Every structure is written in structure tokens, then in C-alpha cells.
Image (tube, rainbow over all chains, first blue to last red; front, side, top):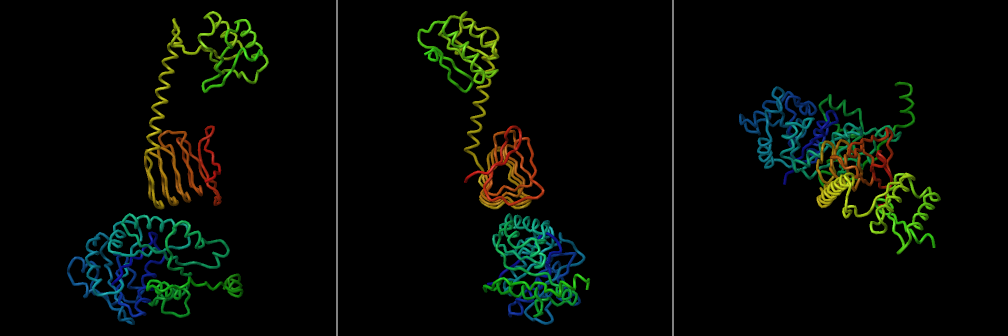
Length: 262
Length: 223
């Protein structure tokens, strides 16, 4: 039985697309058949993170408007042959797809794939409503920052209104040193407000930036802390019980380096 | 036994006097005089004193009334409707009293309805969500920042309150707000607004906010 996830956040820039790309690759590394659907029409990025921009022939709009069957629009990943991307259009806007069309498309995709991950645009308007329409489970991505938590709270409320009961939380870009110094919200503060099941705590990692630029998600890197955290999330999505990782604190020398501005 | 001649009983509207059976007017008058002079703390200025109607004649009652007036007390005869010749003022007062009673009854009746009618919210209210009702509200869950409750009656939150809460929104000054952890951005009761301190601490005990002496007061409660 296939599962449909929507990755959403409300606020922009918290790492929805990065999370989608990493989880997609992670599931594919386990041999699952995965399709990533980008619904951020007009501001598409998911193809860049996967390094697939130059392979796009057709897009989501072509599929929903019935110009091509969805199989023609799918882009296979270069490295993982069970991972596919259904890119969206960069020229149209969010009005080009409606919820019914996406639900119908996901019904088709379900027959072929184990996991369908939908990358949701920021905001709570039409694009958001379209993206969540077909999902079984919502993954809400947030950051340890009051504005991101506030927006996540709003999104959880909106998901509840759309009758989505299965909601999981991923906290991204945690800086363990700042949390320890009391300069950043910690997990208990976030749980206090959002009070939903958390399946991932991802530390802030410069390797995310370098991997984004290379078009190769950091989940493939063994030495990346964020990569390890994403691998744990994938394991939890597959029903395994994995404890939350202990973040490596900045050592004395690393902090000394910061002091001298290196 | 002089204190047996005149009995003073406190009632809702004021002090009610009753006289011993067969007591002479002169003795009663003397006793009241003494009490008025000695017990200054007891007979506060402006207190309403009620005389039993059938105790003395009208002229004697008038004398007592005058005496009370001299000490700054308001004196009335009980059951003024039964008086044979009600003065114009008394009649006006009667009408006002009746109106007041009717109003109080209506208010009590409407309050009763509100108690019967209560909105129960069985989930956490999240940012951007709003409950607006003329009745009271009970929330089994948290009220998160950015959420709003506007209630005609009182608000009871079985959880943490971090949003904006407005009780008695249509002018009920007796409305109150209770929460296990009361740390809202703003509390409004009736037409008063209170803002949380800029440095908010998480409270350990349940608290209750209500209007006391024209201000919003928050005090811990047992629950």
C-alpha cells in the first residue's frame, strides 16, 4: 500500500524542499519506489536540489491539463532508478492546478509507487490547499524560531480544518550550541506549543548548502550530521524505532576558531 | 435589658429594626439615640434603616426618621405599598425599585441561560483560529499564541493559555477567565484590557482573572 506525504511549513525557507529531496533519496536508497511531486509552481526548486533541471521535458501542468500522460513527465534520478521527480512549471502560477486534479493524479501514482512525497509551497493559499488535498500524512517542517513555530502552529490548524489527522513534525536547522546557551528554542519549548508527534530533529549543517549547490542531497554523505538525521527520519517513516541522535557539540578548538574569526 | 428593646438585624438592603413587644415609644427612642451616639462605627453614613410599619403611629415614626436623618442615615418604613397616603416621592421610588427588580430578574434569567449554554472546545486552538460566542467557553486543550476567544460569558481553559482571551465581551463585568497556565498575550474582560508583562514566566498554578474594583486582577486558585 502506498503512502502519500505532503511536506509543508507555512513559513518559507525552513527547508521543505531540502527535506523532500533528502527523504526521497533516502527512501530510494532503501529500494522503495518513490515519486516526488513539486507543487511550488512558478518557484520550482526541487529539480535543482536533485540536479535534474536539464532533464525536464514536461511538467505537472501538462499532466493535469491532460496534454501528456504522467509517465512522460516523470524524470528518473541519475543515481537511484527507483526515484522519480514530477516537476512543475516555472512559467505558470499556483492557479494552474486545482485540488481535484492533484487528487486524481495521486490516485494514478498510487498504483505505481510506494511513496509519493508532495513538496508544498509556502503560504496558506491556493497552492497550499492544492498540495495537501491528496495527502494521507502531513510532515510539518519548522525551525527553532518563534516565527517558524507560530506559522507551523497555524498550518497544523489549517491541516486539521482540512481533516488531515495524521500530522508529524520535523524540526530543522537546530543549532545545539545555541540551544545549550539558551539562545534558541529547545525541543520542549516547541513541543509545548505544537504538541504533535515529532519524527525528526535535524541539526544545522553547512553541508546542506554545499550539497544543494551540487544537486546531491546530503543524506548520501556519511559524514554529514544532517544526513544522519534524515536517514533516521526515513527509518522512522519505514516503521523502525530509532532514538533521536545526540548532536555533536562544538569542541573547544572549534569555538576558539570562531573567536578568532576563522 | 435595654438592648432587647430594639433589635437590629443586617439585611441585604440595609439595617432592619424590630422592637420588643409592647415597648414604649420613649424607651425605644432613647435606646436608638444611645446607640446612634455610641456605636458610630456601626451606623455608617448613608446606611438604609428600615422601620417596622405597624410598631408606632405615623408621627412617632416621623420623629425616629428625623433622628436617623440627623445622624446621616436614611430611614424608611417597611412595606411602603401598604401606606394609606403614599407621597409622590415614595411612589416614584416604588416604581424605580420595581424596574430595578425587573431588570435584575431579567439579568439573572439571561445569566441562567448562559450557564446552560456553554461551548466546549475539545482540541487545541491554534494560531489564527477564533472562537466567538455569546455564551461561556470551555477549552479542553491549549490556546496557542495567535488564537482568539471572544465570549459573552466566562472562559475556562484546561491547558495553557497563550492567545488572546476576551470574557464578558458584551459587557458582563462578572465574567472571569481560568486557565491551568494563564500566560496570554492579552486578557480582556468586559471593556477592560490587560497586557502580559514583557518577560513572561510559566506559572505553576491555575489562575483566575476577574474584575475587582475596576481593574483586571489575576490570582492563583486551587483546582
